[in-house]
Image (cartoon, helix red, strand yellow):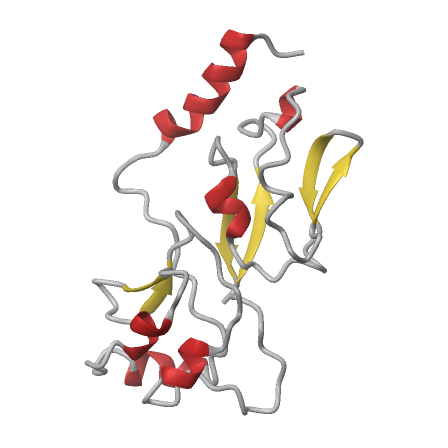
Amino acid sequence: MVNRRGFFTSITKPLKQVKKEDTPPLIRPPYVKDKSIFQSKCPSCESLACVASCDEKIIFIDKETKTPTLNFSKNGCTFCDECAIACERDVLSLDDGTNNTYLNAIFQISIDNCVAHQGVICYSCKEPCIDDAILFNGMFNPIIDNEKCTACGFCISRCPTKAISYRVIP
C-alpha cells in the first residue's frame, strides 16, 4: 500500500524524468491513404485544412517534417472523419477501400509510473477508453489490450502520472 507521500512522489516522478530534448515519435492522423505520398504532398500544403478541421485540436504541423502529427497532451482522436474530408491533397482518404480507423502506434502503461500498479485505486485511463482496451486485474494493475486499442490517445491525456506512452508502428 502506498502512503500519501509515496503517492505524490509517484505522481511527480515521471515529470522529473522527462528531458526537454526527448520528443515523442510522430503519430499520423488516421485515414492515411498511402504513407509514401505523405512526405511528398503534405510539406507543400499551405491550407492546413486538416488542422482546422479537428474539433479535438490534436492535429499539429511538425516543425521539422512540415507534416501533420497528433498531440495527445489534452485530448484524443474521435475518428470523426473531418481531417480526411478536409484534406485537399487526398493524402487522408475515407474511400481507399480499407477500414483504417486506427493510428500508427501501440500504447503501453509503465508499471513504475502508474499509481494503480502501486496499489492506488485509479481508473483515469480506463474511463475515457471507448474501446474498453484497458483491462484491470481486480482494482489494480492495468494493461492495454492491443487487439482492442485503436490508439485514440484519450488515456494519455487523462493519466495523472503520465504513465502511458506509445511507440510508433512503421
